[in-house]
Every structure is written in structure tokens, then in C-alpha cells.
Amino acid sequence: MAGVYFYNGDWYDESPRVMGPMDHSFWMASTVFDGARSIQGMAPDLDKHCARLARSARALGYNPTMETGEVLELCKQAVRKLPKESELYIRPMYFARGGFIDPEPDSAEFILAVYDSPMPDASGFSAHFAKERRPARDMAPTDAKASCLYPNSGRAVAAARAAGFDNAILMDANDNVAEFATSNIWTVKDGVAFTPAATGCFLAGITRERVKILADAAGIEVCETFMSREDVMNADEIFNSGNFGKIMPVTRIEDRELQPGPVAVKLRKMYMDFARESQLF
Image 1 (spheres, rainbow, N blue to C red):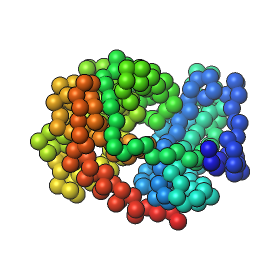
Image 2 (image 1 turned 90 degrees about the vertical axis):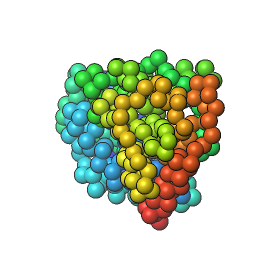
Image 3 (image 1 turned 120 degrees about the horizontal axis):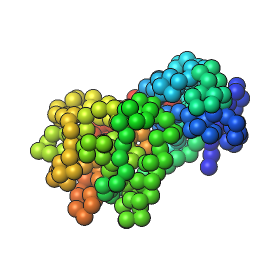
């Protein structure tokens, strides 16, 4: 896997070894990160991903060591070190060295990984409802893109794959639909696009916000609301929004087959048109 990495003022061609068993983030899972994309030199909303990284660090209780603009410039440099035609994952991170239960605020260190990560097949994916749930905001650091939140997503995805699906839909503690295990969820009914209200149990993603802007520009009504299983199962369309695959349709939900719908297709095209405005080369 081709990639470049930045740590402690130096660039590396291979992943540097940076943590050990006495580092807080190694044993207390206090790492935070953000995930952006470069797609053939296009890096949509890269600045917003870099800004969210700093917010996530503060939410976990430690102080970012770099300004958002500095992180943004390092991400751009990293992308330009690799071939323009690459499909890359851009992952700036903070981890904490010191602390016992809570991290020492000034022990944070920054690291950046940018590496090959092909875009998934845009033709669609399957999903089912998981038994795992998203925690309420007073149960976990849901206001951060924190690594400690992801093991439960991993369990949901593993169970989905074992059952013959690609992904899983997680509910919240009140039995409302929250999101997919790896991205935000959207449905369409009678031409209106619905997405769960941002109650704090999931990260309302940067791509989700971009979809709202694009939908408004296209004259597509967006409704943020509480959503039930029945709402999902009875939808005309289901699709996701997230950094990894951007916008992808659901083609099977439980035992119901679906086709990529016109709203998802239109929004994906609009997104890629928007992305072309963010060329780094």
C-alpha cells in the first residue's frame, strides 16, 4: 500500500511506530482522527475535516498542538507527494502520551497518514438492522471522531457480513434510527429526503452537511426527523453519506431489493461536480 506519513517534523514512506504500552492512547483508546479523501487530486471539504480534528481533540480533553491551517497544508503536501490519479484516504490524528484515566491535556501528539484507499463500488450495498446501538451523548464521547467509538461499529459490521449483508443500521437508545455503522443514513419518500435528526448520539458528518447543501441547490426538500425501522423499510430510496464512499445507494435492505433511485443518483453526480472544484494539483 503506497502512502506517506508525517510525524514529529519528518516525512516517512512507511508507517512509523509511535506508541507503546505506557502511552495513554494505547491503553485508554483516547486517539482522535478525521478522515478525508483525495480522489484523483480532488479533496472536497478538506478544510472542514481538519477543523473537526481539533474539536475532537478538545472533546477528549487535550490540547491540539497545531493550528487547523497547518494541518490543512500538511494534508495538501502529502497528497501532492503521491500520484495525482490516486484514490487516497487522508487521516490526521492526535494521540495522548500521558495520563491515567483522563489524558494529560498537553501530552497530545499529531500524526498524519495519507495512503491508497480505492473508492468502493458506487453501484450500491446491502444492509440490515443491527442489535448494536449508538450511545447517547452522556454515555460516550459522541461529539468527537474518537477511535474508542468504533469497536461497536466493527461488531455490527462483522455481524452484518456474517448474515450476508455489507453494512448495518444502528438504532439509538430510544429505538430511533441513528445511522449506518460507518456512515450517515438517508431515505427518500415521495421526493423528500429524510435523515435522522442530530440528537448527539452520532456524528452528523461533513458529507451529510454537504448533501444538505446540494439538495437545497437542487430543490430537493430535506427533513431532519426521528426515523423508525418502518420508515426505512417503506422508503422509496435509501442511501448513505460518508467520507469513504461519499454517496452510495442501498440496493437491499433486509429481504427487500431496491434500485438506485433518482435522488441518490442526482446527489452523487452533484457531489462529484462539487469535488472537482477542490483540485490540489
